[in-house]
Length: 328
Image 1 (cartoon, rainbow, N blue to C red):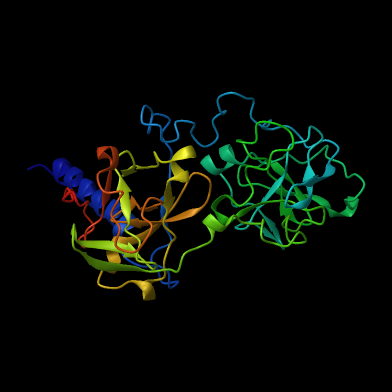
Image 2 (image 1 turned 90 degrees about the vertical axis):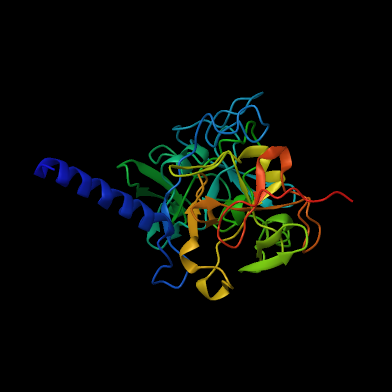
């Protein structure tokens, strides 16, 4: 074997090792079960024909014009939103949002790539305050791509691509990390009882991953509430892609990341965390994003098993369980 071929094979082997370590290489030193293995991409073809969110993150939703991308906010406005109290809008009436993973001190934006397609940053430059908003609260932050983004009380300001008409607040509570902006830069809804700030169905579940001996499927993985964890055949572990978007997420909820201390009877190297296109983080098993099914109403239910021949529980080895439950 010549030296060039040996070098080529060695390089390929190192590449495979690096990819494996990046995804399933174990827990992070920070105490969680893995910082994100890598930013997750979204495929424009993923899920088409299956009714699972063919309107990709950042794509213009069918039946309406999405909120303008790349346009300055103009003269900002303050309006009352049902259940949220006062929220800030751009001059066209589109709701403006903030992201919990950003920071205000110092102003920092952490929504890039596919996240910024779903949540278009509002450019700095020509936005002005209005009654109810202090002019001194407006500022700007330099983004990673070199552009400047508007800030309110230090928080980077975004629109939501799925708000298709002025006054909509579809972005409120998405992923438990996105909230409409109040005039003082805080989360809208905090002064309106707080109950509307994040929908109840999006409240984080108790963390944990453990093995359950299910009478129908055998050993499968469940979350901290005993809910069966599923993976979706139209997703992809490498390259990382998400096919469950849009309306799919009404039925299949992304499982929350967990701390390594909450892992039971599962090899830690299988448990990682990935970032969805909207910037939220999701639990992954052996690189596959995992979900719980809203049709499972109690611990031990496996009603999602085999749905559309696309959804499958995950076994204690991190593989999909293809067992067909007995009827009756």
